[in-house]
Image (cartoon, rainbow over all chains, first blue to last red; front, top):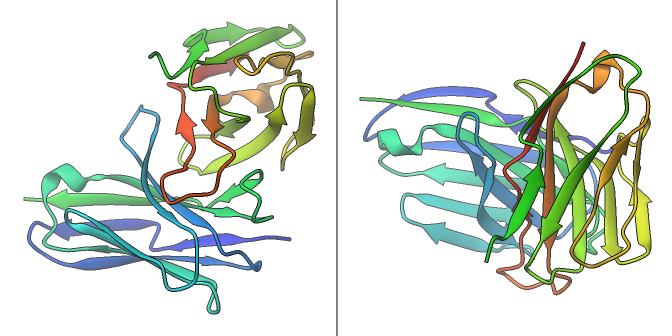
Length: 112
Length: 115
């Protein structure tokens, strides 16, 4: 059975600090996506990672993919309060862009 | 462009009732998906479609049915509502091409309660 795990599930951090969220998965896949969800809202796309070694950066967030280790990371640099949200990774389990499994989410709270 | 729209936004059903959740997109995307999100959890794929007339089961299809007669519409049908189907339902679309910008676009969600 395919598993997508995220670590940690809950993260409380102070503004200005750095931290990394990890996404592990148990199948061979070259495609992984990161999404953000604010409370009571829908999901918003952050990053699309389509190959081993892919690295994407947007503002204070940087995502990477290591398909050999079946691991993706979402690194937060100098966190600000506006980054408080739940972050999900999603794995394309057949590499056709058709069938996705989401992780449980990491609930991030950035404190002033 | 409206993107992905879902109706209704909220609905309360009694056990055993039926309903259809509507999803419409104007993005001309081939792929469409239905997910459910239970409180504090990730999303679970119910059904997906790669084009008009083609649908396939996801991880949790039991108790649901779908159809895809047009590119734009992908309704989700609940035949005999059960309390276990209380959840928030999200529809999503995606372009077929696999490029660095081709991600899923989500609708605003339908919050369903079955009592």
